[in-house]
Length: 371
Image (cartoon, rainbow, N blue to C red):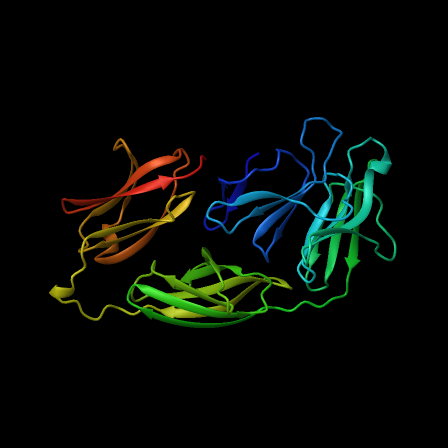
């Protein structure tokens, strides 16, 4: 059973995700939702063999906040939903729960195997399944439908699917009638040559994890980091991948009862270096890669004493060149550059080498997982 992520920070690219813990068996047709409060993916049900019939009702969680995401099986209390696959599922942020509708129980070819029941898996208190009994008309049993949570209307929206006899094109709403609250974010910032610092005071978020987006000199917004709020709800971010004399915009994406809020926009002007005297000349230095071990993208921190030609190389342990980047054009001073892992590089120990004007520095780099 493999796990993948679609990296959207640049050109979209699929990247395998190394995981730890006992993983669920390989399968298909499971429900999958992101649960922001605990920063994890929840999956339920699905089929685990090539046979047409057969489905299960297991619940698994992939915790995403460790350096290596961790799988573990959950054990909800009370009566469990019938095993099924290709059901509709959403996360309800107002009530901290997963809601499931319908699916195919994979016990027969009969229409009765196409379900129209509704269940919730509540994360408040003890983990527990409860079958819901919505009022009003109920959609016919189906599987393979689309579903989404509408945070403005506080409702689950279901479209289409397969009834076992007909492809459906109807749309249904499961309304709860609540009213969500957006997050409240207050930004502040400071800067000195080579560093921009931003702090956000965050209130009413539904989870502690967020993402930082940056725009350089009015350019497009790009995700550059994931962050976690402290006990008081504040998020602090320090950006060293900036150039003196340029302007940078920052946004914070945080989960709320109304979905993902992109908020807290602030602009930071990074000042120029006003004077450099010989006693404060920048030393030739290579700090290394972060994170280390590397899974996909990583940054390298280094300093150049001049704008002379310089290269940053990735070598295997035998000294063979894997990747090279010209960095002398960045000029004198400290720098942080982002590098992408080549797709044909296998897990193992590698070397980072910074070379300029006949001098070189080397740091070790561990690449984890296989592409």
